Structure formats: structure tokens, C-alpha cells
Image (tube, rainbow, N blue to C red):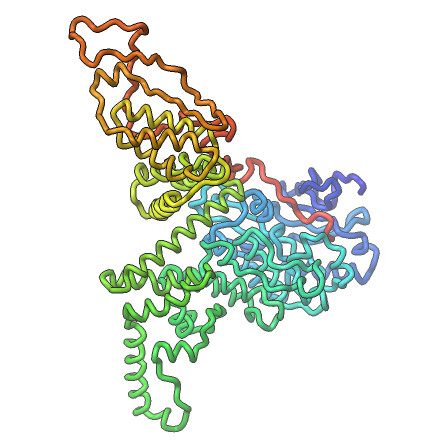
Length: 634
């Protein structure tokens, strides 16, 4: 490409994006003193009269797009035989860059971004302009929300320059990351496109924002090409079932099964927010819908079934009688009665019976539906019900599953842990994976002892109790971290000598319980048994001062215990206050009594650090953000 410094009224500065051959430049309008983005078009728009007329027509259309969620288009021109068009410069970052840095987004952020993109597409569709290339690279984020998550984001849609006359052969030449957002009908007949095409592409963007992956692979062959993807709520437990239904409806392969227009998508997003806020049940939603309008959220229950479940009378056939005042009066009574009936909450048994089949499945999407629609209402309205205990058990199970899923995402995406409880749980899992079962057990103890029982910590308390119960029954036969095992044995002896007999003997019991079937732990088990066989005698202060623990951990593998040989000469049990009995070695200062096992002393060089260092996230957005633009796409 010829290096240009000026094109039309614009001075061209640096190329935008990482591609050195990018057709998108950061420009500056010399007269108006304004920044702009200048996009160079293929030469055919200058050489071919027919293409040039299309350029002029499209330019006039796009200049009419004046909406706060659409990057302002300023027009097209030809200078030095080079066609180009100019847009406002947005000081922000593309959604593609944000997803690359941070992975899946909270569902609230997905809705916030989605509503603004819907507003942009609605303005364009009402003017019969279709984007045809909706993808994260063409969605720009800016505003105070970039640096402060508590403030709103400004979302703008750019690059409306897609050619409606694309041919299938041209589409197949697009980069893979671009093809993955195109609709099935664009591959079949690119000229047969309408609102449904943009709805499908936006649905793919929503799916990626929620799950971190794309729903389809258009480059696959056969049945794999448009295979039904996993539901978003099954991959990301924080995704409300309502939003899940909206997204799945948007990415239907058949265009006529998608929402009828982009306004319906926006209504579905708001409806999802409202349903979550009000805790509306699925059955009530099927009947009431979106404030009386047709709802695009398919919750798997048709209206007639909802009417039957809620005992709502069906509509009678219309006739002359129905236009009479008598009928209107009766109808009013029926409507009032129906409203009273609908507003009457389900009883505890009904809520339980509707939740039970959902909880018996392994589908976490159904668990979320059961939680929102039945379990929480049951516990809130009927706390003393005979079904309350089972409902609480279900809720505990859901919360534990959600905490485990969040931990898995944090580890997989390299995110910083959300809380101290999540960090401790990750540490415990890491210790056990390295063969330090006693260390893991201790971490679970600390979760219960040191973390207060709050709403946020409750799932981790439940997991800790569950894991302790599992470890109590575990018989280790595999990998054992001998150095940490020896350290715990030493710690147990020190605790007993210092006076904390209960905690020391508990460690020995755990050693026997865990390693009684492990060849590597045989020596530690024998020592633990011998220590527990000794009579319990609380040492006096003088005995604790004079005596130190004696360790003789000998196994068939001749494991080395990292403790020096002690002088077996003990100080007299009783000595004159003023004249202590002489010994061959100087008296050693007794170790301080401890109330807990200090894991910092049990670090093992062979297993790495006991506690994983917190993962440092990249800044939410770079200090000098760059927008990648639309390189090589014209």
C-alpha cells in the first residue's frame, strides 16, 4: 500500500490495529481540528461506475444514522483515485479486546451492553439499514465505566459498511473469526438478509460474552456445522434462566424461529432483568409474559399449560352476548377473581413438588430455575414447613455447586480470587493434589474456624464440612508428601509437650485414619499409634521446660525425620527452688504453646508453595487503548 500522509480533508496519522497493512487510519480533520477514523475502500469503488453509485447511495444512507449508540458517519469521498469514508474517533476499546483480556462477563454487564447495541440496530433497521457484520470487533466501549465498574458504559456500534451484495465465495474468504458470527442464511444466500441476520450475529456475541466461547463453527462439515450448542446457563451458573432463553432464541438456525425484530430482543433483555429482580416463577411468566405483550422468552411451558397449572379460566368464544353490559360486568368480576387467584402464592407442598423434579436432574440450568421459582419462595414464605429442611438442603447444594464453578472459572481464566474463602479453598485443593492431605484438612478447619458465617462465606463452610467428612473416610493409597507428613508428626509432638494435648492427639488420629493403608505412611502411622497408646498426662511447667519431644520415625524405606537427636537425660522432676540440678546440656527454653497448626512450618520444597500466589489481573482497560478497527475487510 502506498504510504499516505493526507487524504481529502484529513491528515493521516498512525494505522489502527496491529496489522501493518491496515486500511484503517487515525486521522485529523485539518479545518475542523477534530480527530476521526479514516477507512480506505477497495479501488473498485473509484474505478467501477456501478460500484461508485453504490458507494454514493450507501454513503447517503449512513449519514442519516444519527444515534448515540452508533459511531457517527461523516461521508465518503475519492481523493488521488483512492475511495475512503470517515467516522468519529472513539477513545475507547473494542469488546473483542475486552473479552480477550477478561473472559466471560457478568450477566448484568451483558445486558447493559446488549441493550445499547439493540438500540443502535433498532435505529438502523427502522431506516432499512442492516449491519450484516455484528461482532465484538465492531462494538466499542468507552466512558466512565471503563475505569469504574460502578459507572455506566457507553456502547457504540461501528462499521455499517458491510456490502449487502456479498457473494458466498466472498464470505468464505473472510477470516475465521469473522465467519463465526455470520448467520446460516448469509452462507446459503447472502443477498437474502433482513433483521433476523443481525439478530443471529448479536446472539452469537451475547453467547460469547456470557460463556467465553462461540456457539457454532460454520467451518465444520455436516451435522457439526450448526449443531445445537450447550445452553449458556449450563456453562455459566450466574446466567439467569431468562437471559439464557433469550440468547438461545436469537441463535436459532432457522430465521423464522428467531425474535421477530430487534425491539423484541431488547424487550426480552429488560424482561430478564425484571424477572430476576421480582423472582417471578416460570409458570407465572408463561401466563403474564412481558407486561401483556408477546414474550420472546421460551420457558418450555405454553400458555394453555400455564393456565391449567394456575387454574386460569380459558377465554370463551365471542358472540353478541359478549358485547352486552351484562357480559362486561361478569367479565370484570371474572378478571378480578382471576387476578386474586393468580396473586395467591403457591403453598409449600406445591412449591416443593415443582422443585423436586428439577433438582433430581443434573442440569444446573434447571437447578437455577428451581432456586428462583420454588425453593427460595418456599423458604421465605414457609420457614417452618415440613418441606423446609429439604428445600434448604437443595439450596445448599446449589450454592456449593455455584462456588465450585466460580473457583473453576477463576483457575481456568487466571483471575484473581473473588474472596479469601475462595483462595483458601483453592489452597486446600492444591495441597491435596500434591499429596499433603493433612495440610488440606487443616485448611478446611481454618475455613470453619477463621471465616465468619456470612451469606458469602456460607457455601465455603458447607464445602469445608463436606470435604472434612470425605477426608475422615479417605484411606490414602497413592501419592504421599512425606516431608509434610513428617512435619505434622513433629508438630503433634510439640503440641503435646507444650500442653495442647487435645490438638496434638487429633493430628495423630488423622495420621492413622488417612495413612493406615499407605506403605509410604507406615512409619508415621506406627509412631502415631504408639503415642496414642501412652496415658494422657498433662506435663507440669517444669517438665515442659526440661523435656523435648523424642522422635524415632523408622520405616522399612528408612525415611529421614528432620529432627536432631535429643539428650535422653531428663532434668529431675522436682528440684530445689534456689539450686536447680546440674545437667550435661544447658536447659532449653520451652516452646510456646500454640492453639493451631502453623502451616508456614510445613512447607515442602518438593511440592512447591503451600499457598498459591493470587493471580494478578491485567488492568480493566489499557492506559492508552487502541481500537483494532476493520483491517482488511473492505
